[in-house]
Image (cartoon, rainbow, N blue to C red; front, side, top):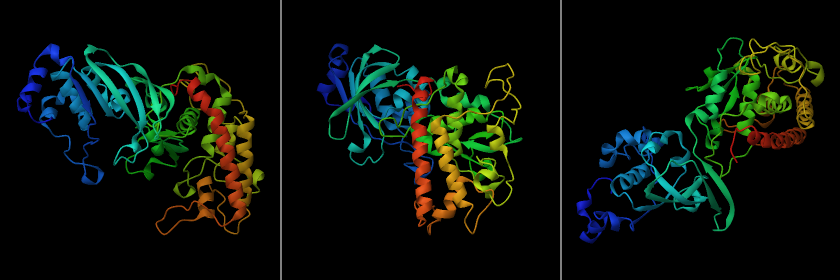
Length: 419
C-alpha cells in the first residue's frame, strides 16, 4: 500500500476508487503497524519508514513521517478522498507535537473514537491508550477535541475521556523556559524539559549539576526561579501515570497559581523530599532542616534551603514570577499536609545522624543509599534490613502521597492539565 500504485488492485476495486460517488461508500479499515524509525538498531527499526509514499509526501509528513501509520492515513486522505477511515492508532496524531505540520494537511473530520489499553493488542507491552477512530475524509475539519468512550482490558466501558489538540505554544515546557537562568549561584539543576506528557515524567528530575548528564535538557535552579521550578516539578510528579493519562500533555498554566502561596509552599515541600540531589556531586543546598532540629554532629556547608524558607534570601529578580512590583520576601507558611511531610522527614534525618557512619551534608538520596545499599549491578535496593529506617521512610512516603493528593486538584484548576 505504501509502495505500489492502485493499478495493481482488482478491477472491481479500481472501479470503486476511481468513481467519486462509489468511493463515498468505501471504508478503509486499518490496524496499521506500530513501527517508528530509529537512528540506531538497538533503539528500533532503522529505515522502517522508507517508502514511495514517504518520498512523495515527505514535505507534508515532516517528523510525523517517522511513524508508518501516518503514511497510510495520508495516502488515503490525499488519494482516496471521500472514503471513510476506521483505524487503530496511538493518540500522537491528535496530541503529539511532531504532528503539528502534518495536521495542517490531514484534516478529515473525526466522527467518533473509543480508547483501550495498548497492552490488549498482540505484541504490545506498553501501558498507553490506543484509539479506534472513525474519520470522514469527505469533510474538512481541524481537530480540537472529542469525548471518547474508554474500555478496560475486559471490554467494559469504564469512563469517558476528553482528548484535546494542543498547540506547541501551550506546552508546559514553553512556560518553564521563561524562567531559564545561568549557572551563577545555582543550587541545582532541573532536567527533562524536552517532553510534555506523562510518559516523559521519568526523565524529569532534580540533581546537582548538568555535568552529571550526557545530554542535559534543563534549567539551572537558583533563588530567582526556585518557586517556579518547585511548582513545575511537583505538577509533573504529584499525579501517578497510568495507561489512560500516559499521553496527556502538561500545559502552560493560567496566572492564578502566582497568587496561591500555599500551593507554592506545598510544591516546594514536595520537591524537597523527592529529588536526586547527592552531596558527592557538590554542595548540598537542599537540607530542609537546621543542625539543631536533627541533632546533627557537625555544621552544614549550606543553609540555603532553611534560609529560603524563612524568607532570609532575597531573589535576584522577581519579574515574571511575582510580577514587576518588587515584594518583600516573607517566611513561608505550610499547610498541615506539608508540615506532616517535614515532621516525617525530620525523624528520618535524626535517625540517620545517630548512625556510626554519617555524612553531615547528606541528602535524602544519600540517606536512602546509606540504609538500602546497592545490588551487584549498582542499582539501589528497594528495602533495608533496618526496621526503624523502613518505618521512617514508609511514614515519609505516606505523608508525601497525602501532600501529592492535595496538590493534584490545583494542577487542573491552574490549567497545568485539562480534565
